[in-house]
Length: 534
Image 1 (cartoon, helix red, strand yellow):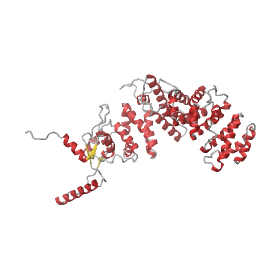
Image 2 (tube, helix red, strand yellow):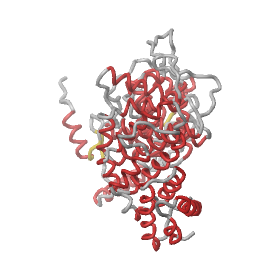
Image 3 (cartoon, helix red, strand yellow):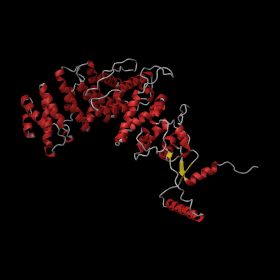
Image 4 (tube, helix red, strand yellow):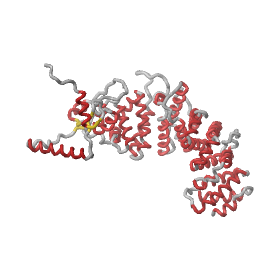
């Protein structure tokens, strides 16, 4: 059906004709995302006609059909001018139950209207800067929080809650003011945590320990999608939450971390959905103060000792498995891999039991050192390969992760990676001369295997593995030939240096790199008086 015909049949008071025309139009354009520029003005007029029908009252079925059509049209940024007026946004707010005067969700028969109105608002806010400003003026965030509270009554409100959370995520993503309002004035963190708990129907066996049932069924698609939207909204609300300022803050974050642990142990309806669910969970865990992440391994909250209450590493193992899957994907490392590496690094740095467990999994005692550290299919091999990745952010976080597992000791790191792979990190940290990082770690020593101790004298420190001895090319040269080759090499370096193609560098006593002449000067200053007193 062409737009002229639809426009002629969509008008207030003629509900059956309107429904009939729009039903056909919606069916034809359900998957339409690119629109004909020639019909732009007609689509604008159709938007105006739809709001005219909605404003003057229509049956529930007519409202749903009109909102479906508006959702399709709102995919086109160019036709939103007549949509993004204060009056029209208020109409959609009222239909989505965001109006402060609306006290209840109403009958279940009206739920599809609420869902479609929320979908329209998601499209409009995402595509229109004018709508984004109006959402601030009309206090959308407060309305969405009230709607979330109304969704706690246990009725079948999955879709309403899902699109409420999606719109809240968009608003907090696009407006820092709304993010601050949600975090402080609207108490968004406890509200969204309670919402997440309600979606998953979490039952508690202890203060921070969710009840785990054997053979728990996978989450439904709706539960998974709704959980993902809640996690994304919570991510925006918890940005910059590095410090805990009170006991109540610590409890709030630990409670959230306990729910996230429950999600890590859960699975979605498919492998892809499970990965998406766990990805958003790990992103949110990265925002939680690391001191509150002890519940990942100690959900009971009881004090751990050497003989009692051993840490539960199930969640940590699943996060490690997720990290390895992301490495194996081989693409989008910055977006897909750096959050989980950052999380594991901070957990290892702050919590000794986590570091010891991950070290045993990622860097087990060395036995076979016949291959380079980056060659092979173990997790260690994969991470060492990332240390020389072209993406600076990726190689930095991969190197930092391994460095923390080695208790920030240079000699320990080099044992597992070789000097060549670690040079970038050591140069950045001023540790080319050896030593250790600034952080203190426990003094428990790593024990080397007999195989490693036997092979250690023959390991090439640069490559990190045992190499077959190669013939020395200068053994058969005369002294004159050796001198000639040495001067030739000096001249080549001199030419490259004078043409600024390379810059000879040296290492200062503090491990940082400086131009060679400067390094020599520092060395001369640092030398003690060498006069012979005998």
